[in-house]
Image (cartoon, rainbow, N blue to C red):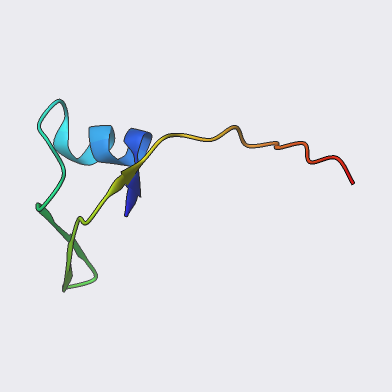
Length: 45
């Protein structure tokens, strides 16, 4: 799973779903792209 921002940084305008990301010689398949969420979320208590 990647955020929209991460997917855009890694793959540009190409679709990220099903693509492979390699981190520290380990390959990961993108299974979903999440909408970016605000850094500060306010939840009423």
